[in-house]
Structures are given as C-alpha cells and as structure tokens.
Length: 66
Image (cartoon, rainbow, N blue to C red; front, side, top):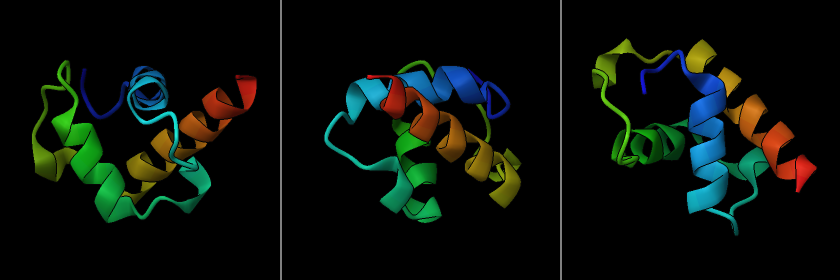
C-alpha cells in the first residue's frame, strides 16, 4: 500500500485497531500507525495533512459501518 491507498489503509487500521476511535486520533499517531502496517510500503515524507485527513475520514466511515 501507498499513502494514496486511503481506503485500504483505513480498512487495515479498522481491523488492527478496533478499540480506537478514529475521530480522536492525532495525525502524528496516525502517521506512525500507517507506517507500521505490514502491507504498507511508502516513504514517510510522502504523506501530508491532507492525506492523513483522507485516511482518517475513510477510517471513520469504515468504523461506522461495523
């Protein structure tokens, strides 16, 4: 996965962090958690606040589907 795979990242985060409320996640933590995902393979500096926000919104949407 790359930074722009926001939905795939959100699904992985929802599965690996089911007890986390994505609305309360700081972008610094979100960045670290994405980097730690097993299937994630991209450069740390290629993220941006906009990308992290898109991941967070997709994660919120994913969490609300459960």
